[in-house]
Amino acid sequence: MRLARVGQVLLLLAMAVVQVVAFAATLAAVVLTFTLGLVFLFPPAVLMTRRLAEQTRRWAREWAGVLIESPYLPKPPPPQRGPDGFYRHDRTLYKTPRVPAWSQHWMWLVGDGGSWRDMLWLLWDPFVKVILAPLLLTLPKVGLYVYAHWARLLLAPTAASRLAVQVQQLKKVRSLANDTQAAEMRRIERDLHDGTQARLVALGMTLGAVEQLIETNPAAAKALLAKARDASSETLTELRRVVRGIHPPVLAERGLADAVRAMAMDSPLHVEIEVDLPNRAESPVEAAAYFAVSELLSNAARHGNATRVRVDLSQSEEDLRITVEDDGMGGADPAKGSGLAGIERRLAAFDGVLAVHSPPGGPTTVTMNVPRALPDRSPNGDKARLPLWKTGLTWLLWLTAWCPLFPQGLVAAILKFFEVDVKSWFVAFYLPEQWQWPFIMGMILLGASMYLSAVLIPATHSKERWMAEATPRRLWLRRC
Image (cartoon, rainbow, N blue to C red):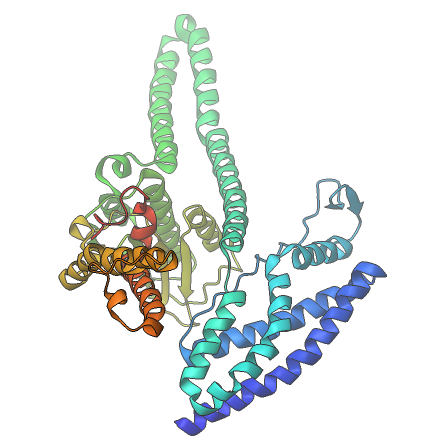
């Protein structure tokens, strides 16, 4: 085990030589890009730096157990051809997507703060490795752990980069939601135009014929009235079907579980339903999940040649999880059809994800997960509550930290600085002269550490709750 650690340390130190060469090349590329306009040199330099940074993140995770997330913005989507047949970038139109794609790629690399932080890390990392070399060689495990935390200082995403990634994701989700809404509107219009509208037009023509025949041929008029009555009944059925396609009444009244059960009764397949949903989700989430299950059942019957389907609706903490498994022929791929892609668009509006496992020959298993769609099933959020020993320790730190910090630390330091000859209960003044200042500074450090520990104990136990409830006035005491 120690031999493997030594090998990791030697590999890490050898990488410092590569980093020096890479930084020299990157610096030359940046200078030539922004002085002589050789912009084609910048992307390869940034991508090379990112590869070295990603390698370091992987080593930190595998060797020291320190997770460092990638801070980079999502890659821009490929340019889309406009209605006029041209590709647009800023205010310029192009006949081919080559130039817009390259420009977007270049702007993505230049405008990403993670690219510049990687270059800063590439500058300082070889020096840090040289400084840590004695520790890395004598205590490899500790040295790798310390180095991983140093790498996380510059290679981990900052609050600004996290916010930028979220903004990019929200833009993408908004675009997908708009596309999904437009597709739904087109479907409703098509259903009304091809079905209900045609029936209403035919009903109007029939009533016009009855109006002409009611005096000359009452028998024919009665027959047409009967036909009009049947047509009105069929129109009403068609309208109800369109309404159910928009938002089924059973979904609004009974919830997702009963709506899926009702859907299973109308399916030509043998559908088994397993439900573990103690809470209901918001109406838009239920609608998206309902139509996703409906699409999967339809695909299993039409394209998968399935006979049996199992639908599992469950809650995992605050997430809604849906699993649909059929015994069809398999081979389902979201990239090959619009059905699964449409489900992805529906779920993306709620940060949901779709996972498909469909080998040739089957079976097909589709798992959908919508995060934070349901209330936490744990009573009163017990999972975020501190255990009793942590609560007692936190209160003890808050109640006792004032003593070393203020009277034995800050107050004693003031009296010592102004040479006030008052011993009283200040412990430092009973010590020899050469030990008084070290003792006072130690008391200040001890008291500050106790206050910091009192804050960090609940913060590290449940970070989300701590960030949500932290206010200066409460001082985080009631969260215990």
